[in-house]
Amino acid sequence: MYDPKTVVDLIGRNVEYAGNPFGALPLAVNRWWKGLNIPRDGNVILVTGLMFQFLPLIRKVTKIMERYEDTRWASWIKYGSLIPAPLVQLGSLAALSGKDFALPEKMLRNVVELLWLSGIRFAYHPDLDLYSGILLYDLGDEDGFVDHAYRVTNTLTSAGIKSIITIDPHTTYAFKVLYPKYVGVSFNVYTYMELLRLRGDGFKGLQVTLHDPCFFGRYLNLSHVPRRLLADLGVDVLDVQQSGTFTHCCGGPAESLSPRFSKEIAARRLEQLRQTGAPILTMCPICFENLKRAGGEVEDLGSFLRRYAE
Image 1 (tube, rainbow, N blue to C red):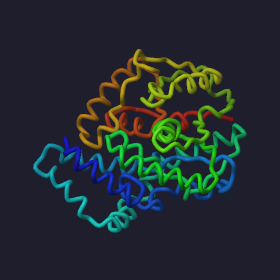
Image 2: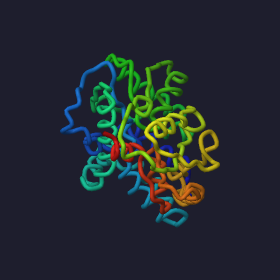
Image 3: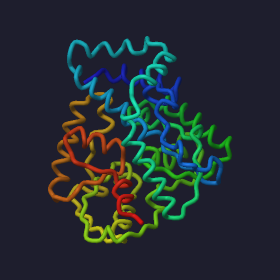
Image 4: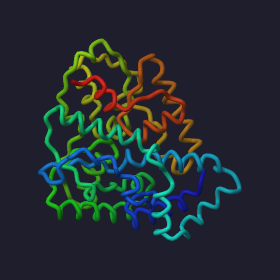
């Protein structure tokens, strides 16, 4: 395991300077929307929280951390704070290629198309799509999280935003629960799943197993939403015992401190999910990445829905 304080301080520095845990330039990771002609102004905006966009960085950083965890080189992570923040931002431009972003960008575009198929009108403005700060909260840096939450909510309220559509459970939890609690700012928050009204004959007779992310299953009580959506389409959901409120963690965000331990947790979860023999669907980019890293054949719910929706 890496030293928790060193990791949290480094993440906090990056969030304070660049608005995200990696210190990356937004234009380096957030390009999925280009060419989609989504309106920039509207009463309801889509907020991704940049979680899907971070998947290539999460994969690359976790791989490096796993290689050096519990070696004599692990302590060198403390020198990360000595790298000038502008240099970190410039490095993010060269660290990854367009190929690395192909899958997460496709996932996001699938969600947009599903919303359009459902007749949902919304806007998207990249300058208003901000990281929620949830990892700081997860790792116990409450002060850093609150400072960042104020920056996010001030930006959105200054733009007159009152209603948002979210895609992932981490961003959803931050906006629905944490922001009202810690900074006293509330928005009308809807997950994209709650808004979908789909049809398609290709769904009938299919079987899947859902992995409920902790925030949807335990804390937001939204596990019924994807199941009702799939049932209405004729899809049979084969649940394992550890589902819904009793879901089992995928191992995130433990990969920030111990990639090996996180992988062990993901492997145990994967063993549970495989018991049904049905294809496994995730609803969270972190869950998707952790289960894949443990050797799982998994697919994002939005991608599955888009493949068959008419």
